[in-house]
Length: 304
Image (tube, rainbow, N blue to C red; front, top):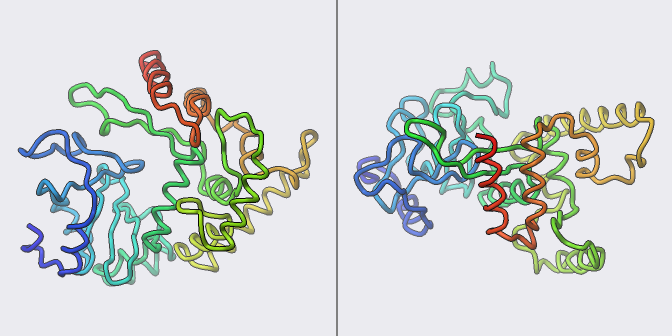
């Protein structure tokens, strides 16, 4: 139990107020990787309301302070775990395989084992959630429900990604243009201007994150020097690619989304089809969920 784990009163209070997604295998326990809800790629929920706990083996891999608590677990050892810090109000994206560190690996190895979780990407909790929401909004992450046979599959979701590299993802995330799938495109400019006015007053926007704010979030998570270097590398490569281009609009007039969509060579046919299904279903502002579910179901049945 949480009491046996000696968690602080702040942790217990946080867990009392969080919403939970009930596990589908009932109160007798959930088999690993099945019957849980996926919150993101290879990240599954913990249903504390039903008495569920994090797997004990993670404590052998990474001990955390009493004021921190695992809010989501990874799907297997390759998955991403979410660690809440009640003292600092942050979320840490922790990976046991240490593939997203914010410091050089030799420096990481020199840290005391109990402190190594702090070298994983960490953000203000609100900003972290907004960033994940934006990945869904921009169709960088595209979940597709699948029916798992006995002993097969990872959870009940298959994930498709439109960004193959972190640089591509950052480029899409920092694009301020909102994707209006299925819309007629009329009145978008006026709506953006009005929203911009509301932003200046600090009102009217809840989940959207502007490009400059995204830059700040990545800077906080990965460190100012690394983030500047990464952005410079992306911009340098973009300028090089633009110089080799022989056709198409000037890169200066293209949004990040347009630049990415003009080169879809990294997308396989399945990713393109899933993207089109979401777009044709009006994602995100005019989303027809039933239409999308029907099209995705047909897609999965055909591919299997």
